Length: 91
Picture 1: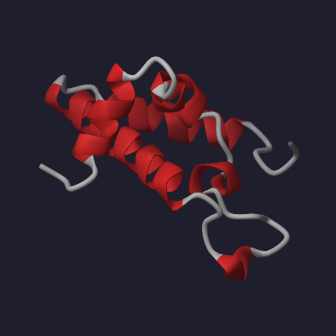
Picture 2 (picture 1 turned 180 degrees about the horizontal axis):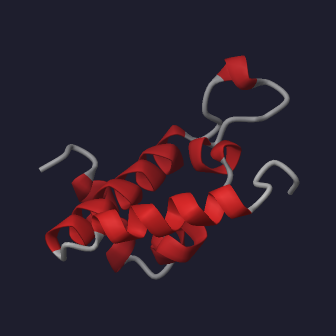
């Protein structure tokens, strides 16, 4: 068990924090939102380390779940194809 798991479990059970663990939102975030780093001041580090850890834990356990379902590699291939077809830097 990863040290971030208890925070993730707490967030999943909390109505106030549950929205921060939604996979659809997580995978639509850019790097700056995921890491909570201010794009204008990246050297300052994360603005919200706890939220950054929660994003990481959500991604980590979602991908582990996909792997257990034997869906990780299909998910990865579709993601790579999608980003190859999109101009991800335009938006």
